[in-house]
Length: 224
Image 1 (cartoon, one colour):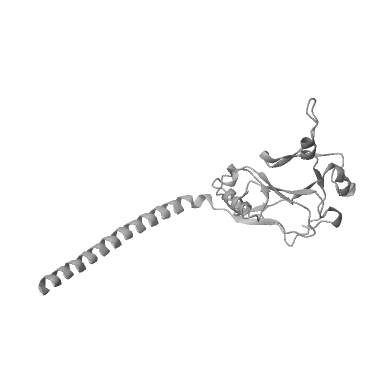
Image 2 (cartoon, rainbow, N blue to C red; image 1 turned 90 degrees about the vertical axis):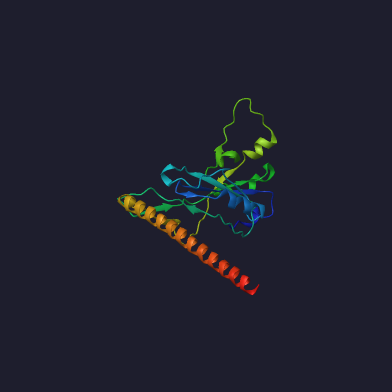
């Protein structure tokens, strides 16, 4: 992340919103550890089911928070889900969209965000931390106009100049539906074979140990 000098050192805050498709997930335990080590400041769902396939998962967003600096490096660990087997394709292309950048400066410093940088100058956004997203600021009748509400709903979406070293996509292998039966039978056969080998090997070790113990007892009796 790189910011212009006017924003650096001010009381402004940025949030990088990264939308993740259903085929991508995060480990909340992993992110909890990174936050505990102060290597990440993020807002994300409290629970993400990492075991479901892509077809049964839901997309979600992760928010990365920080204060504008001249240069800053951010890292978000991502993992890819497996896909349901298919006979029509051998791989699935997973594309990760570019992130969105939101800025929030105190009311007195709002002029620091130039209108040319704002994607929608007529729109302000509210940070919805429980849902890990931004909502458009719609003033409702009877809603108290407190400083806390003004600061929470003073976010602006700005343009980002993204320079990618490579496309944000991955090819995920997809299993074949017709291979389900042979793979299942092979797995069961291999599992039973390993279990039988373990039993036979354990029994052989037990007999060998007992034989040595008996030899030691006979040797002790001869010595006496």
